[in-house]
Image (cartoon, rainbow, N blue to C red):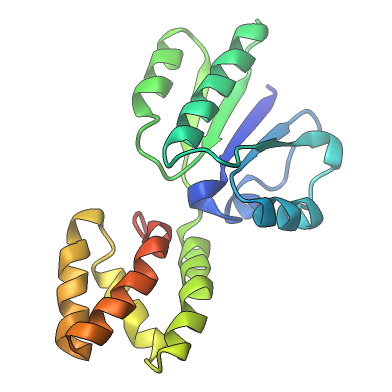
Length: 188
């Protein structure tokens, strides 16, 4: 059965490459990218044949717009093909569950797969390590704290812990520096 992968790069970064390797000759990968720099990086580093990879530019979209765009893209692709295919959305977002359940009832095999969290942890570390080093704090110690309070509903606890450890001003600066990258750790 032919597989088509739909990659949500907003929250799986480059971790998906190892997850879907190797590709079968008939497989196809659609890479949704909202960052021009990431798109250039991926185009030069993806180990799959170019004819099996298509980039879908989502630059300028809002926070959840890429998820909606991916769902629409999958729906459009599946409506064009009467042959059964396996549609695989590679994303850490939980919002695809109802969409996938609806397609499964209609005999289309849409499967939600998550990113490789070990790589996601590394992506987080790569983003915050230079910032934390510039702030003259131990990146590894901050990482332990961030992983401990990685869930969305624990962000206030993370902030309180950092303030307790580093003081109000510095703790808040550290929190603001790492918060935009916490999505790499949410499901670890």
